Image 1: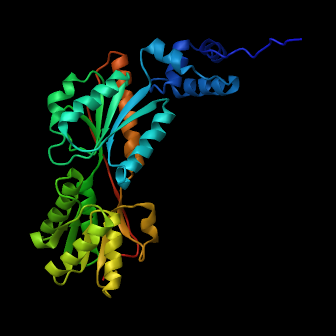
Image 2 (image 1 turned 45 degrees about the vertical axis):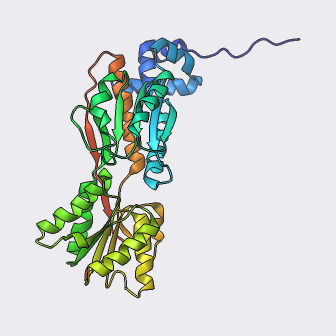
Image 3 (image 1 turned 120 degrees about the horizontal axis):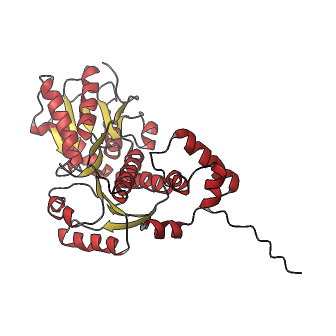
Length: 347
């Protein structure tokens, strides 16, 4: 005997009837729309869980004329920053029911930007997250070409521009916090190992170092700063150069933790006691920084949060367009925090 009593597939109408709401309200709850009361949202979510309702992505896409796919453009995932930001993007996209389509640039040839955008648009993405660091004039195309792109575009780690949505760490404020901490610890000769200058993030961290020292009435000369390239190898070279160009150096603000690691190692090799003779502050708060020796004082930037915030803002822009509402562009700075550990202390 063949049994044909397969379980009936639960539909959005079943959920709406059980919850005592309209199918449109159920759809709004499932799509994370903000304009649903907390009580109604909770009731619908409880019914969804009880009935085991699983919305059809295909049906949802066809009915709403959306692909529920976001395009991501990124660059050089060997760096910690882009990879951690991508983790946050992926987690929030999954939470909000979006798939990701990623394109990784191998260089900053602006002639290829149209090809990348056209490739994503051809796959019907609902929006594009541009997670490529701003380096030199590699974002000069933005103001000229943005109006030609038919879907919302949001930029990560870019200098704010009027009328364009972006999310970034407040790198300038992070530099201020690092140097002010060293000043509060009694340090007077504070050098800086920067990231590669021309990167907006590196320039902002250096500006924080410079302006904080100037505000304290202390010198910040060209020879007090040496340029790095984010890598530990270059961090070591830059530190050696800084020791030669800045006699009496008693503190150093390093633009990322990877370079700060090599500063701690070279200081140990030379018999320079950290923090007694030299205080060191990094930037990023990578998980390993708590296990450096000595443990590293650093500026913590929440890159997964930035990635998640970018997705949240993007989805709100998409929903606004879907509802024929204006999508207001906004630039959001996520504030960093100071994490004090053993590599700095008051003298």
